[in-house]
Picture 1 (cartoon, rainbow, N blue to C red):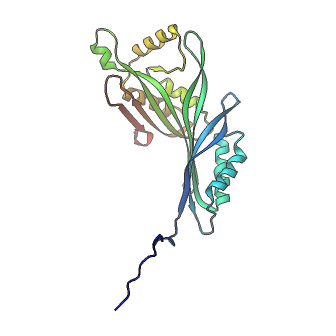
Picture 2: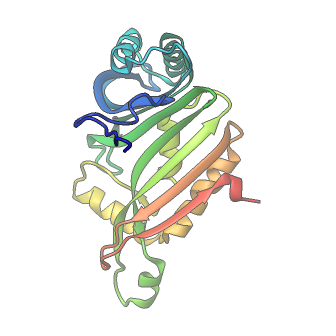
Picture 3: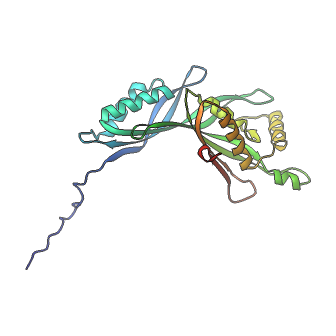
Length: 261
C-alpha cells in the first residue's frame, strides 16, 4: 500500500517559488523639497516602492532604499527623483523600479482682502519608474470651493456651496513646478480655499463663489482646458470630488486627456 506524504506542520509548500516583484509600502522619511522660489521646504514623505527583479538581484529593499534616499534627502526635486530611480535600479540590480513619494506641501498664501498670511497645505506625489516601468507623474491634490448653479438658480436667496478636492496628475516634457499646477487648479474653481480668513476675506470668498457657480463637471472641464493649453504637459488626468453640504454623498467628475478628441 502506497504511503501518503504530507507537508510538515508550519512549512509552506510553495517556498521555492520564484517571486519576481518585491517592494515596500508605508515607509516614512523626512525630506527637503525644492520650492519654486528657491528655498528648501522640510516635510515628511510616505514612500511605496516595487522592483522587478532579475536573476542575481539584491532583495534587501529597505536597506538599499534608505541608503539611496539619504544621498538625495537634502533637495528632493523632479530632477533628483530621476537620479534616485537610476541609483535604485543599479543598487537592486533590477529590471525595473517604480517609486512613489507622497508628502504634504505648504504654500504661504495671502488672504484676498486683509492680506493675512497663512500656510496652506496641499498633498503632492512624485511617482516614477525606470526600466520596463518607465515614466514620471507629478500629482497634486488641491482643495477648492464649488457652488451649485442649480441651487443658485432656484433659490430666492443664497445657494449651497461646499469644499471640493481636485486631483491633477500630469506628465510633461520639461521641468514643471508644483506651485504652477496648484495655481492652474485653483483658477478653475468657484473660489480658492484659504487656511486663514478675516471678516472682509470671508465676504470676498463667499461672494466670489456665488458669482462663479460651478458643478464638478464645470471644474474638471476648466482644469482640462488649461492643461491642454500648456504645451509642456503631454498627458493629464483630473478628478474632482465635491463633498456635498446638503447630500450624504459626494459629487464626482473625471477626465483623462487620452479620451479627449
